[in-house]
Length: 255
Ligand SMILES: [Zn+2]
Image (cartoon, rainbow, N blue to C red; front, top):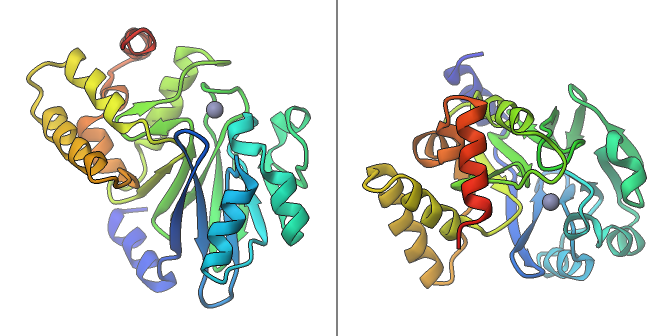
C-alpha cells in the first residue's frame, strides 16, 4: 500500500489522543484515547499508579493494556491497573510465562482492536526474544517498546544482532510519517553516541542539537518518525547485520 493510501486511511479514521506518562527513571507509559468511544489503552505500564493518575486527571478509564515485552519496567504496573479498572491485557504469547496477568497472547500477524483503530502485531525480536510492536497504520502510529528508540535501539539482552537488524529493517518499511512511540527517554544519549560514531554527520548533528534543546526545556523528545530515524538513527542506517553489531557493541560501552 502506498503512502497516499495510508494517509487517506489516517484522515478517515482520525488520530487518537496519545499522552506520554513519565515513569520510573526514564520510561514512558503511553495512554491512547478514543474520544468517540471513551476507549483508553495503556502501553507498557511499568508503574501502575503513574498510569492511573494520568488517566484520572483526564477523566479517562483504562480498559485495555498493551505489553511489548516482559521486562518489569514495562509490566510491573499491570496488577495495579487491572485491579483498579478491570482492563484486559494483550501481550506477547511467547513471553506468557515471564510476567503475570496476560489475558490475550499475541503472535506476529495478529490484529487487535484499539478503540476505532486496529493494531497489527509485529514480532520484532532482539531486545527480548518475544518482543512485539503494535503498528496502527490506520492511526499513523507505532508503539515500538524497547526495539526502536529515537536515535537508537534496545540492547540485545536475548536476541542476536541478525534478529535485531531484521526487526529494525522491518520497522523501516513503515511510511516515513509514522509516529514512533518508544518506551524510554534515551534520545540525547543515543545522539551523543551517534555523533561520536559519525563525526561531522549533518543529520546527526542537527538532531543532537534539537533533542538537547528539548531536554534542556524539560520537554519529551518523542514521538519521532520513521523518516527521521531513517535519516539520523545509525542503527536504522546500518547496511547489514555486521555493521549493526559493531555499532551496538560500541554503544554498549559508550559513556
Ligand atoms: Zn526492556
